[in-house]
Length: 123
Image 1: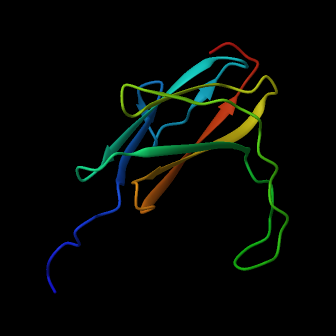
Image 2 (image 1 turned 120 degrees about the vertical axis):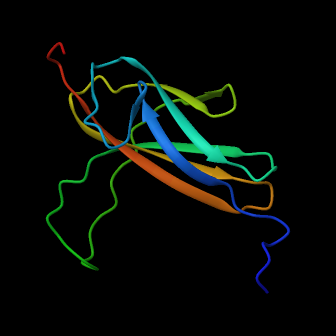
């Protein structure tokens, strides 16, 4: 119809970890408390958040090859100031990825993710 629908999905516009955008290499310390800033366009609706933390995949399979799902890393997430997600980095060094999902009350959603490295070496 050329018109926007009455309700629109929230749109994740940008992610920043420790103040740096998703295009940067993110290296953090084990157990460091992290803040993920999520720039979201909510289109006037209340935004509900879901977050998950996973180890980075080491699979070398491509395309539609069947592969086992990764096991989620236990973590607690606290959303504050509307769109800042706080969580603690894993104690185990390695590559991880945080997934963020922003939904409205009619279950229209968008998602984004950001990779980071937990390193035992001091930056």
